[in-house]
Image 1 (tube, rainbow, N blue to C red):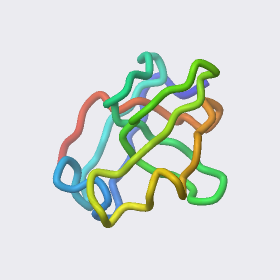
Image 2 (cartoon, rainbow, N blue to C red; image 1 turned 135 degrees about the horizontal axis):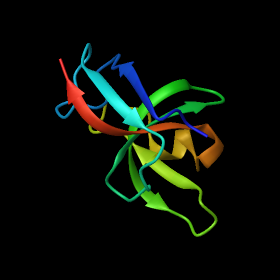
Image 3 (cartoon, one colour; image 1 turned 30 degrees about the vertical axis):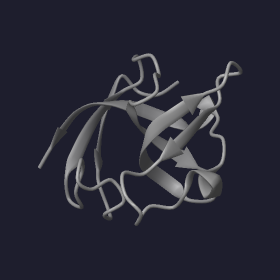
Length: 94
């Protein structure tokens, strides 16, 4: 289960203009996942990623996307397991 609250630093431009390199996010492990929310996951191939949820399957898997074309694609990321979830973004700041 994800921690109650965590702070992560954004690295890279894949979530611009919403989040920029060097921004910070505060996450919670208690919020329900919905399409459109931003999450932090630990992907087995790409490591820690901050992306937007674009689809959720009934089995609990979810599909992610970046905010611009500099991000890796949803197809590259693939369907994500809830076990990879580190938190759902509550607050962003610089």
